[in-house]
Image 1 (cartoon, one colour):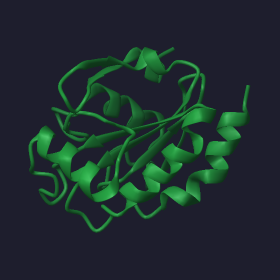
Image 2 (spheres, rainbow, N blue to C red):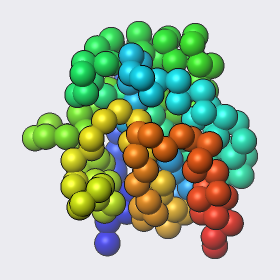
Image 3 (cartoon, rainbow, N blue to C red):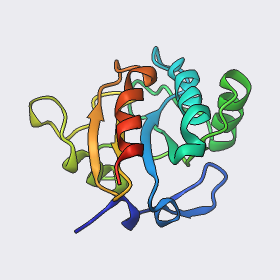
Length: 162
């Protein structure tokens, strides 16, 4: 059985990251953008990180430029934007594609494990969120319109699960 821990990614500064490093933790994985109507959700994601990191939550942001070219900057520019404008201290990863032939394998897996509305596997827009349990399995997919704060109860339940 495949789990989130079978995947690797690059951090925003280009260093390899094995998601095995987060084994036993709850993960919130989000495709982000710096110039989107949902960009203020960075603040809410940072709040979740600050509230739950010491309880076992890992927030991972994956910048993506596939929706309206809303994250056209370089990885260093994106990192600077997130830090300066939203005080982001959760893990930001290198920019990836989440749809199409060049979609990152992690996102191919996430979207097949938790399809969207009407069974669609495609990511529809920036700030689609995936909650992953301590066992590395996807618990739920959330729409871009679902605010980070609205995920608190589900995060708390995942953190309390054994």
